[in-house]
Image (cartoon, rainbow, N blue to C red; front, top):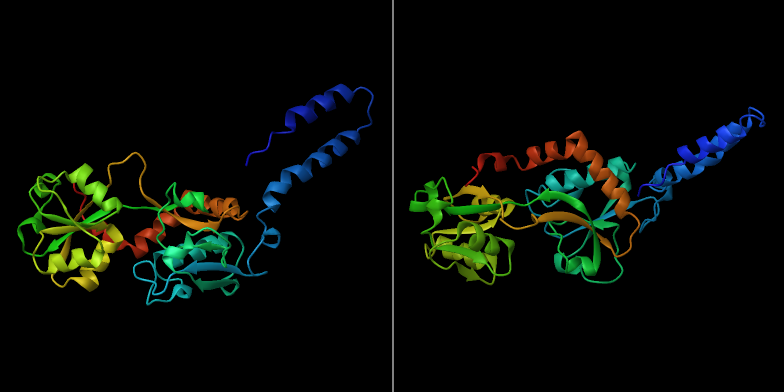
Length: 292
């Protein structure tokens, strides 16, 4: 948080007292102001942080930890997008890799109300108003786009625009941003086929009951790599809503670490390091053409 500057106030005192005060009085005024200026910075010093385990930054995520977020189901490797981001944030906060501990936290329980056994959780958790009633979030570290997946060689696999997908029978999971995006952005002439589980949509694609599925882009990479042989990413597009879907780091409500993690993320964004991490671990995103 910004603090009001003491410069004008201290300057006025110096001018008022200049004619009668000894020269070293001004140094007293300056030194009195300095502790307030350094207090905000000191609040994020490692030794000042209130941690779940003293001396350790405890980060939660689910198991299994899927690619491309984590490599080989090992969050502690520093490989995979979210693992790399977590360690970059930890480094900005003054923690070495040996001072980072990982805790297994099921996705659904992470944003339930109540005490947490981690300092923050990183697990592709979308920032939503309903979740923010029970937990706190950092600023977003990844803005989600939607990916269209089809069987290679089929009619809609070669689409290069959203208009070319109008006549496709599209499958999507219920209650997802993808469903909203299909209806608002693609606006297909046929109602989308809505499935309770993502795996049901995947199976429908395998069985050629639908022409394509729409999921978030990182999931699209997983679908094509591990779930549906002979499938391809047709392209990507942004959800046409007022606020883009973003993933945020999750905290117990009222956790004072939020501002310090936000500070670290801000530095990673301004330096370009966060974009470099995304490029390194989500490089396939560059190969999924933008559909407009």
